[in-house]
Structures are given as structure tokens and as C-alpha cells.
Image 1 (tube, rainbow over the protein chains, first blue to last red):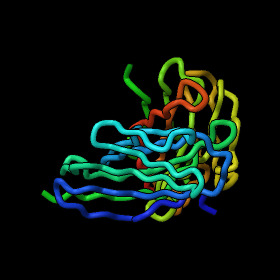
Image 2 (image 1 turned 30 degrees about the vertical axis):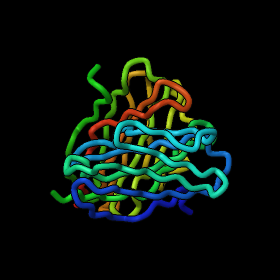
Image 3 (image 1 turned 90 degrees about the vertical axis):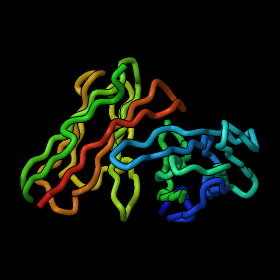
Length: 111
Length: 113
């Protein structure tokens, strides 16, 4: 059973548009929610993260929106650029520092 | 710091052979994680260590898989005997403490023929 469900599986956005990736979880004990960015041939790298006591976190063009009651969180990429084309993973931290990853979203930003 | 180092970067082997993947975490990091990534199953946690001690190995798929961390600067993931369904990219990651960012290595792409 997948602990973190991510959608969509793939996403095509025009340059300058907004990319939105959604994740949902069931375990209310999760206490830290990072997003990772992965380019082909590379390992995932932390992009931005949020804790459940905050509803939104923004870093540059990247924003996490967190809805604790709905157990959902999403990544918004404003003014999407071709260089943002990558696979994005959401994750959640459970007990004993164990992380659960979503299935990934392949983003393609068209010029 | 050079980041998490994994070797080899690519491994092609035949079914039944033993495969050993290696990882050097970032110096000073207390946690080390082994993940497997496939198209079908995404990124799966196999096992992780805290201060060289295995904490959770529930993600290790079968007894054919084993992992060790003999010291703070080295870990191995061994598959014996290997099977074609083990073909995947295996990542090692380390983090300095509880809840901190995980830093991933470049991965080892394993192909079992």
C-alpha cells in the first residue's frame, strides 16, 4: 500500500505557465514533507520542504501548499521554465526518520 | 565535500552472479539509506542505518539482498544471486540527523541479463 499518492504521473506545461503537482497521505503521524527534483541520470535533490504547522512555504518560483485537514499537499511552480523539466517526487517522514516517496511526476516544460 | 559517492555507476551482470554496490556517505552524516528506483514501483526504501546500525530493513525484497555498514564511511548492498527483476537504479542517500535533508548519490544502474 502506497503511503503517499502523487498525481499526475506526467505533466506538460508551456513556458511561463504554472505547474501543479499534488500529493495525498493517510498517516497523520507524518511530520515533514519534502519535495525532490530529479534530472535524468542524477539522484533526487531536495527542492523545498514544509512542516504541517505551516500552510504555505515559498522559495522563489516554488511554493508548497499544505492542507492538514485534507491530508494533501501540492507543489506549484510559477513561471515554469524549460530548465524545470525533470521528475518531481513528494515525500513524507514517518517514525524513526523513515521517508515514504510518491511515485513521481515527469514535468515537461515546452519552450 | 564531494557528496555521496556510489560505485560502480553502471553494472551489467548475468543472472545468478553476485553483485555488490558501494556507497560512501557524506562525512559526519549519521543516517544512510539505500533506495531502489524502477519505472513500475518508483522510489522504494530498502534499508537504512543510524550510526552504522540497521534500523529498518523491511523494504529488502528477499533474502538474496543484504546490506552492511562496517564503519561510518562505507556501506555495501549485495545481491546474491542476482535475477533479471533486480534490474533498477540503486541510490544511496545520507543525512546528518533526524528529519534533515537526505542527500542522494548519483545512483548505480544495475542490469541483470
